[in-house]
Amino acid sequence: MTAWVLPDHIADVLPSEARHIEELRRMSLDTARVFGYELVIPPLIEHIESLLSGTGGALDLQTFKMVDQLSGRTLGLRVDTTPQVARIDAHLLNRAGVTRLCYCGPTLHTRAPGPYATREPLQFGAEIYGHAGLEADLEILQLALRCVFASGLSSFHVDLSDARILPALLRDQGLSTAQEAAIAQALTLKDISAIRAMGASLPSALHQALVELVQFYGGMDVLDRAEVAFQQWPEVLLALSQLRWLASHAGHAVSIDLADLRGAAYYTGPRFSVFAPEGPDALVRGGRYDEVGALFGRKRPAAGFSFDIKALVSLIARPAPQAAIRAPWGEDAGLHKAITQLREQGHTVVCMLPGHDSEVDEFHCDRELVLVKGLWTIQTLA
Image (cartoon, rainbow, N blue to C red; front, side, top):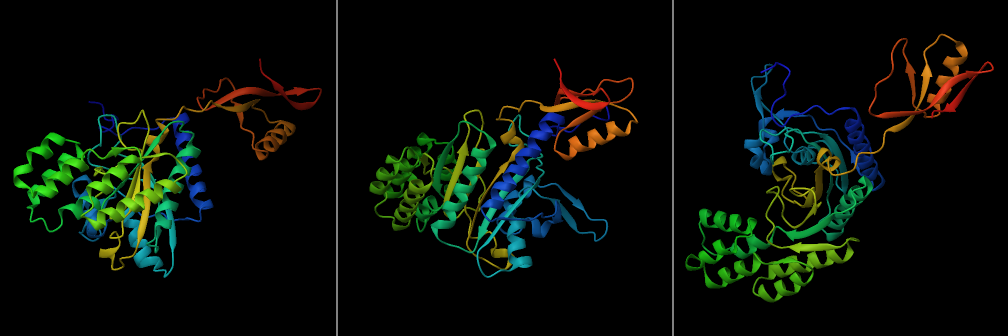
């Protein structure tokens, strides 16, 4: 094997795609800025105790670890930026009111989530802290959708769910940890046969509720049917009511998937996922996670979302090469002045070095700078 072969699921990003990724990164940050979100840049590496504290512990197997030669302590490379932003909110900012934060940076996973996925996502996300009402959930959902719209993705759909439903159904049912794990797995896989096979080991009302739950996905009528099926669970009825409100205010058509358990384990309320037809998994995941700051000493309401900019770029048609002006290399003062003025005006000017053509993927030289009657003039290339 040659020394320069990269590890599996790690890849260089070449010019035109890199520019596309960078433009989408800037667009996402600008979109968050107009919503009032402040930019933070957490470190790529932290002490493992901080990086995996609280809900971040679920990411232990996905985290690359190493020993700090300065302190001898174990360090980790971040898999998810959300716990870091919670630490910033709790310990560094420590504001009393609502705080809106956004971020964008690389993460690193020990295993790729799919056969063609990267282990080095470029994660963009936004978080709002300090407001427990649905207004914060709606703002986060609308910001996420605005980012997807602005990217140019032409076709996608939004699923709503709620992390409180299954815990409410299982509470005080006397089930073992293994039973609860089996139920969660069956719901995740939409395996109604497995749910039905559990009938003998579950209370009859719970078993019937789970059989209904695994089938509750589709249009808004799902909420109507669920309200009938879950009459004896007030907490579930509250979750359904809040999902109905979010759906009515989202500004985009949504579907409902009440058994959706995929994604991070720290959600505590309404959740949403954005899917593209070409994508194997959710493109965006977000929702409410009020417990995220608890082990940082400051538990307060929080909602947010994140997505991998690289994954989003892979679903969008690559833009045409940017128009550019070709210019000769020379020491003429007039030529230097003309090139400088064009670049200051925002034009891309590619100088042809002596004896070479310029080979580029990102730019298309459709004009050239030529000397006409003593003046450097732009002419259209055939």
